[in-house]
Length: 325
Ligand code: PBG
Image (tube, rainbow, N blue to C red):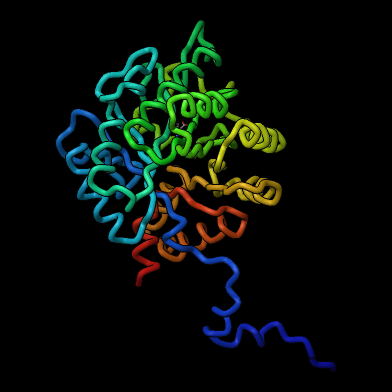
Protein backbone atom coordinates (compact mmCIF):
# COMPACT_ATOMS: atom_id res chain seq x y z
CA UNK A 1 0.00 0.00 0.00
CA UNK A 2 1.37 3.45 -0.91
CA UNK A 3 0.51 6.48 1.17
CA UNK A 4 -0.32 9.88 -0.33
CA UNK A 5 2.48 12.44 -0.58
CA UNK A 6 0.13 15.16 -1.63
CA UNK A 7 -2.30 15.76 1.20
CA UNK A 8 -5.03 18.37 0.73
CA UNK A 9 -5.86 18.10 4.41
CA UNK A 10 -2.55 19.79 5.40
CA UNK A 11 -4.10 23.13 4.52
CA UNK A 12 -7.27 22.34 6.44
CA UNK A 13 -5.45 21.54 9.64
CA UNK A 14 -6.64 24.40 11.80
CA UNK A 15 -8.90 27.40 11.75
CA UNK A 16 -6.15 29.99 11.21
CA UNK A 17 -4.67 28.16 8.24
CA UNK A 18 -8.13 27.77 6.76
CA UNK A 19 -8.85 31.46 7.18
CA UNK A 20 -5.59 32.42 5.46
CA UNK A 21 -6.89 30.72 2.35
CA UNK A 22 -10.23 32.48 2.07
CA UNK A 23 -10.62 33.99 -1.39
CA UNK A 24 -14.20 35.11 -1.03
CA UNK A 25 -15.47 37.01 1.99
CA UNK A 26 -18.66 38.84 2.78
CA UNK A 27 -18.39 42.41 3.94
CA UNK A 28 -20.88 45.05 5.08
CA UNK A 29 -19.41 47.28 2.38
CA UNK A 30 -21.10 45.21 -0.30
CA UNK A 31 -24.57 44.88 1.22
CA UNK A 32 -27.58 46.84 0.01
CA UNK A 33 -30.64 46.81 2.26
CA UNK A 34 -34.11 47.20 0.67
CA UNK A 35 -36.57 49.49 2.47
CA UNK A 36 -40.30 49.79 1.76
CA UNK A 37 -41.84 53.16 2.50
CA UNK A 38 -45.61 53.60 2.37
CA UNK A 39 -47.71 56.71 2.10
CA UNK A 40 -50.65 57.21 4.47
CA UNK A 41 -49.77 54.81 7.31
CA UNK A 42 -48.65 55.84 10.78
CA UNK A 43 -47.23 52.55 12.12
CA UNK A 44 -45.03 49.89 10.48
CA UNK A 45 -47.02 47.16 8.72
CA UNK A 46 -45.61 43.63 8.75
CA UNK A 47 -45.23 41.79 5.47
CA UNK A 48 -46.45 38.31 6.36
CA UNK A 49 -44.43 36.43 3.76
CA UNK A 50 -41.24 38.32 4.67
CA UNK A 51 -40.79 37.94 8.44
CA UNK A 52 -38.74 40.80 9.89
CA UNK A 53 -39.45 43.19 7.00
CA UNK A 54 -42.04 45.96 7.34
CA UNK A 55 -43.64 48.64 5.23
CA UNK A 56 -42.63 51.82 7.00
CA UNK A 57 -44.34 55.18 7.36
CA UNK A 58 -42.12 58.04 6.35
CA UNK A 59 -41.91 59.21 9.99
CA UNK A 60 -40.16 55.97 11.00
CA UNK A 61 -37.48 56.12 8.29
CA UNK A 62 -34.88 58.12 10.14
CA UNK A 63 -34.75 55.84 13.18
CA UNK A 64 -34.70 52.72 11.00
CA UNK A 65 -31.87 54.08 8.90
CA UNK A 66 -29.93 55.15 11.97
CA UNK A 67 -29.96 51.44 13.00
CA UNK A 68 -28.91 50.36 9.53
CA UNK A 69 -25.96 52.76 9.49
CA UNK A 70 -24.92 51.82 13.03
CA UNK A 71 -24.70 48.22 11.88
CA UNK A 72 -22.17 49.24 9.23
CA UNK A 73 -24.43 49.04 6.18
CA UNK A 74 -23.55 51.66 3.57
CA UNK A 75 -26.41 51.50 1.08
CA UNK A 76 -30.18 51.10 0.84
CA UNK A 77 -32.58 50.65 -2.05
CA UNK A 78 -35.95 52.33 -1.61
CA UNK A 79 -39.33 51.09 -2.83
CA UNK A 80 -42.38 53.34 -2.54
CA UNK A 81 -46.00 52.39 -2.01
CA UNK A 82 -48.21 55.35 -2.92
CA UNK A 83 -51.66 55.90 -1.39
CA UNK A 84 -53.20 56.50 -4.82
CA UNK A 85 -52.42 54.55 -7.98
CA UNK A 86 -53.60 55.32 -11.52
CA UNK A 87 -53.33 53.89 -15.04
CA UNK A 88 -50.20 55.91 -15.82
CA UNK A 89 -48.50 55.52 -12.44
CA UNK A 90 -48.26 59.29 -12.23
CA UNK A 91 -47.27 59.41 -8.57
CA UNK A 92 -43.98 57.76 -9.56
CA UNK A 93 -42.68 61.07 -10.97
CA UNK A 94 -44.48 63.44 -8.61
CA UNK A 95 -41.93 65.71 -6.94
CA UNK A 96 -43.93 65.20 -3.72
CA UNK A 97 -44.30 61.46 -4.28
CA UNK A 98 -43.54 58.99 -1.51
CA UNK A 99 -40.06 58.05 -2.71
CA UNK A 100 -39.07 61.62 -3.51
CA UNK A 101 -40.17 62.75 -0.04
CA UNK A 102 -38.37 59.84 1.57
CA UNK A 103 -35.11 60.53 -0.28
CA UNK A 104 -35.18 64.21 0.69
CA UNK A 105 -35.65 63.36 4.37
CA UNK A 106 -32.95 60.68 4.34
CA UNK A 107 -30.43 62.89 2.55
CA UNK A 108 -31.15 65.82 4.83
CA UNK A 109 -30.50 63.64 7.88
CA UNK A 110 -27.65 61.43 6.68
CA UNK A 111 -26.05 63.08 3.65
CA UNK A 112 -23.02 61.13 2.47
CA UNK A 113 -23.25 58.62 5.33
CA UNK A 114 -25.51 56.48 3.18
CA UNK A 115 -25.79 55.64 -0.50
CA UNK A 116 -29.44 56.00 -1.50
CA UNK A 117 -30.63 53.92 -4.44
CA UNK A 118 -34.16 54.30 -5.78
CA UNK A 119 -35.98 51.52 -7.60
CA UNK A 120 -37.17 53.07 -10.83
CA UNK A 121 -40.31 51.37 -12.07
CA UNK A 122 -44.01 51.96 -12.55
CA UNK A 123 -45.48 48.72 -11.21
CA UNK A 124 -45.86 49.98 -7.64
CA UNK A 125 -47.74 53.03 -8.94
CA UNK A 126 -50.10 51.66 -11.59
CA UNK A 127 -53.60 50.32 -10.89
CA UNK A 128 -53.00 47.39 -13.28
CA UNK A 129 -49.65 46.54 -11.66
CA UNK A 130 -47.63 46.47 -14.90
CA UNK A 131 -44.27 48.20 -15.30
CA UNK A 132 -45.47 50.69 -17.93
CA UNK A 133 -48.29 52.15 -19.98
CA UNK A 134 -50.79 49.52 -21.16
CA UNK A 135 -52.70 49.67 -24.45
CA UNK A 136 -55.06 46.86 -25.44
CA UNK A 137 -53.41 44.57 -22.92
CA UNK A 138 -49.88 45.24 -24.17
CA UNK A 139 -47.14 47.27 -22.51
CA UNK A 140 -46.24 50.02 -24.96
CA UNK A 141 -42.49 50.43 -24.86
CA UNK A 142 -41.78 53.91 -26.14
CA UNK A 143 -44.59 55.72 -24.31
CA UNK A 144 -43.29 54.09 -21.15
CA UNK A 145 -39.75 55.33 -21.84
CA UNK A 146 -40.91 58.96 -21.63
CA UNK A 147 -42.22 58.35 -18.13
CA UNK A 148 -39.08 56.52 -17.00
CA UNK A 149 -37.00 59.56 -17.94
CA UNK A 150 -39.30 61.75 -15.83
CA UNK A 151 -39.14 59.41 -12.85
CA UNK A 152 -35.34 59.33 -13.02
CA UNK A 153 -35.08 63.11 -13.01
CA UNK A 154 -37.55 63.50 -10.13
CA UNK A 155 -35.64 60.93 -8.05
CA UNK A 156 -32.28 62.56 -8.83
CA UNK A 157 -33.70 66.00 -7.96
CA UNK A 158 -34.80 64.63 -4.60
CA UNK A 159 -31.20 63.52 -3.99
CA UNK A 160 -30.93 59.86 -5.06
CA UNK A 161 -27.31 58.82 -5.60
CA UNK A 162 -28.23 55.89 -7.82
CA UNK A 163 -31.36 55.08 -9.85
CA UNK A 164 -32.18 51.46 -10.56
CA UNK A 165 -34.51 50.90 -13.53
CA UNK A 166 -36.23 47.53 -13.07
CA UNK A 167 -38.86 47.36 -15.80
CA UNK A 168 -36.94 45.55 -18.58
CA UNK A 169 -38.20 48.17 -21.04
CA UNK A 170 -36.10 48.34 -24.24
CA UNK A 171 -33.92 51.44 -24.32
CA UNK A 172 -34.56 52.41 -20.72
CA UNK A 173 -30.93 52.97 -19.78
CA UNK A 174 -30.27 55.24 -22.77
CA UNK A 175 -33.40 57.29 -22.16
CA UNK A 176 -32.67 57.66 -18.47
CA UNK A 177 -29.02 58.64 -19.07
CA UNK A 178 -30.08 61.28 -21.60
CA UNK A 179 -32.82 62.66 -19.35
CA UNK A 180 -30.50 62.86 -16.35
CA UNK A 181 -27.67 64.49 -18.30
CA UNK A 182 -30.01 67.03 -19.86
CA UNK A 183 -31.02 68.18 -16.38
CA UNK A 184 -27.43 68.30 -15.17
CA UNK A 185 -27.44 65.06 -13.18
CA UNK A 186 -24.30 63.84 -14.87
CA UNK A 187 -23.08 62.08 -11.72
CA UNK A 188 -26.23 60.15 -10.91
CA UNK A 189 -25.34 56.48 -11.23
CA UNK A 190 -27.50 54.04 -13.20
CA UNK A 191 -27.66 50.59 -11.69
CA UNK A 192 -29.67 48.67 -14.25
CA UNK A 193 -31.64 45.53 -13.60
CA UNK A 194 -30.29 44.21 -16.90
CA UNK A 195 -30.77 40.51 -16.42
CA UNK A 196 -34.16 40.21 -14.79
CA UNK A 197 -36.10 37.01 -15.27
CA UNK A 198 -39.82 36.35 -14.97
CA UNK A 199 -39.81 34.55 -11.67
CA UNK A 200 -41.96 33.01 -8.98
CA UNK A 201 -39.34 34.15 -6.52
CA UNK A 202 -40.87 37.67 -6.57
CA UNK A 203 -44.24 36.79 -5.04
CA UNK A 204 -43.58 37.96 -1.46
CA UNK A 205 -42.38 41.31 -2.85
CA UNK A 206 -45.59 41.72 -4.80
CA UNK A 207 -47.54 41.21 -1.58
CA UNK A 208 -45.25 43.79 0.01
CA UNK A 209 -45.87 46.53 -2.54
CA UNK A 210 -49.21 45.31 -3.90
CA UNK A 211 -47.91 45.16 -7.47
CA UNK A 212 -49.26 41.86 -8.68
CA UNK A 213 -50.43 42.44 -12.27
CA UNK A 214 -54.24 42.51 -12.33
CA UNK A 215 -54.28 40.68 -15.68
CA UNK A 216 -51.60 38.74 -17.57
CA UNK A 217 -48.08 38.28 -16.27
CA UNK A 218 -44.85 40.09 -17.14
CA UNK A 219 -43.65 37.55 -19.71
CA UNK A 220 -43.50 39.98 -22.59
CA UNK A 221 -40.95 42.18 -20.86
CA UNK A 222 -39.14 40.08 -18.24
CA UNK A 223 -36.90 37.28 -19.52
CA UNK A 224 -37.66 33.59 -19.83
CA UNK A 225 -35.40 31.55 -17.54
CA UNK A 226 -35.02 28.89 -20.19
CA UNK A 227 -33.08 31.34 -22.37
CA UNK A 228 -29.80 32.37 -20.72
CA UNK A 229 -28.19 33.88 -23.86
CA UNK A 230 -30.72 36.68 -23.83
CA UNK A 231 -29.34 37.80 -20.48
CA UNK A 232 -25.89 38.25 -22.00
CA UNK A 233 -27.33 40.36 -24.79
CA UNK A 234 -29.41 42.47 -22.39
CA UNK A 235 -26.28 43.19 -20.36
CA UNK A 236 -24.25 44.14 -23.46
CA UNK A 237 -26.98 46.53 -24.56
CA UNK A 238 -27.31 48.15 -21.14
CA UNK A 239 -23.56 48.69 -20.94
CA UNK A 240 -23.59 50.28 -24.41
CA UNK A 241 -26.49 52.48 -23.32
CA UNK A 242 -24.53 53.72 -20.33
CA UNK A 243 -25.25 51.50 -17.32
CA UNK A 244 -22.67 51.96 -14.55
CA UNK A 245 -23.59 48.80 -12.63
CA UNK A 246 -25.74 45.87 -13.67
CA UNK A 247 -28.05 43.70 -11.59
CA UNK A 248 -28.81 40.01 -12.01
CA UNK A 249 -32.13 38.98 -10.54
CA UNK A 250 -33.10 36.57 -8.98
CA UNK A 251 -29.78 35.33 -7.64
CA UNK A 252 -29.87 31.96 -5.92
CA UNK A 253 -31.26 29.92 -8.80
CA UNK A 254 -29.25 32.05 -11.24
CA UNK A 255 -25.66 31.63 -10.06
CA UNK A 256 -24.74 30.34 -13.51
CA UNK A 257 -25.98 33.60 -15.01
CA UNK A 258 -24.01 35.64 -12.46
CA UNK A 259 -20.89 33.69 -13.29
CA UNK A 260 -21.28 33.91 -17.06
CA UNK A 261 -21.91 37.63 -16.96
CA UNK A 262 -19.28 38.54 -14.39
CA UNK A 263 -16.58 36.74 -16.33
CA UNK A 264 -17.34 38.87 -19.40
CA UNK A 265 -18.05 42.39 -18.18
CA UNK A 266 -15.79 45.11 -16.86
CA UNK A 267 -18.33 46.98 -14.77
CA UNK A 268 -19.59 46.01 -11.29
CA UNK A 269 -22.32 43.43 -10.85
CA UNK A 270 -24.96 43.31 -8.12
CA UNK A 271 -26.92 40.17 -7.32
CA UNK A 272 -30.49 40.62 -6.08
CA UNK A 273 -31.23 38.01 -3.40
CA UNK A 274 -34.99 38.43 -3.88
CA UNK A 275 -38.01 38.18 -1.61
CA UNK A 276 -38.83 34.54 -2.40
CA UNK A 277 -35.27 33.45 -1.65
CA UNK A 278 -35.54 35.25 1.69
CA UNK A 279 -38.96 33.73 2.44
CA UNK A 280 -37.77 30.15 1.81
CA UNK A 281 -34.88 30.53 4.23
CA UNK A 282 -37.02 32.25 6.87
CA UNK A 283 -39.71 29.58 6.71
CA UNK A 284 -37.26 26.70 7.02
CA UNK A 285 -35.39 28.48 9.83
CA UNK A 286 -38.64 29.11 11.73
CA UNK A 287 -39.33 25.40 11.63
CA UNK A 288 -35.86 24.71 12.91
CA UNK A 289 -34.95 22.76 9.78
CA UNK A 290 -31.88 24.85 8.94
CA UNK A 291 -29.49 27.07 10.88
CA UNK A 292 -30.43 30.53 9.63
CA UNK A 293 -27.09 32.22 10.20
CA UNK A 294 -25.05 29.47 8.61
CA UNK A 295 -27.30 29.02 5.62
CA UNK A 296 -27.57 32.75 4.88
CA UNK A 297 -23.80 33.22 5.05
CA UNK A 298 -23.32 30.23 2.76
CA UNK A 299 -25.88 31.45 0.22
CA UNK A 300 -24.56 35.00 0.09
CA UNK A 301 -20.94 33.87 -0.10
CA UNK A 302 -21.89 31.66 -3.04
CA UNK A 303 -23.24 34.73 -4.83
CA UNK A 304 -19.95 36.50 -4.34
CA UNK A 305 -18.04 33.42 -5.39
CA UNK A 306 -20.09 33.32 -8.59
CA UNK A 307 -18.91 36.87 -9.29
CA UNK A 308 -21.24 39.35 -7.59
CA UNK A 309 -19.54 42.47 -6.26
CA UNK A 310 -22.59 43.61 -4.31
CA UNK A 311 -25.66 41.89 -2.92
CA UNK A 312 -29.09 43.42 -2.47
CA UNK A 313 -30.56 41.41 0.38
CA UNK A 314 -33.31 41.52 3.01
CA UNK A 315 -30.87 39.63 5.26
CA UNK A 316 -28.50 42.64 5.36
CA UNK A 317 -29.16 43.67 8.97
CA UNK A 318 -28.76 40.13 10.27
CA UNK A 319 -25.63 39.59 8.21
CA UNK A 320 -24.12 42.82 9.49
CA UNK A 321 -24.80 41.68 13.07
CA UNK A 322 -23.24 38.29 12.41
CA UNK A 323 -20.20 39.81 10.73
CA UNK A 324 -19.72 42.16 13.70
CA UNK A 325 -19.90 39.34 16.25
C1 PBG B 1 -40.18 45.84 -9.94
C2 PBG B 1 -39.41 45.07 -8.95
C3 PBG B 1 -39.72 43.79 -8.49
C4 PBG B 1 -38.73 43.45 -7.57
C5 PBG B 1 -37.86 44.53 -7.46
N1 PBG B 1 -38.30 45.51 -8.35
C6 PBG B 1 -40.86 42.91 -8.73
C7 PBG B 1 -41.27 42.43 -10.05
O1 PBG B 1 -40.57 42.50 -11.06
O2 PBG B 1 -42.39 41.94 -10.06
C8 PBG B 1 -38.68 42.15 -6.84
C9 PBG B 1 -37.84 42.12 -5.64
C10 PBG B 1 -38.03 40.95 -4.78
O3 PBG B 1 -38.75 39.98 -5.09
O4 PBG B 1 -37.41 40.97 -3.72
N2 PBG B 1 -40.24 47.18 -9.67
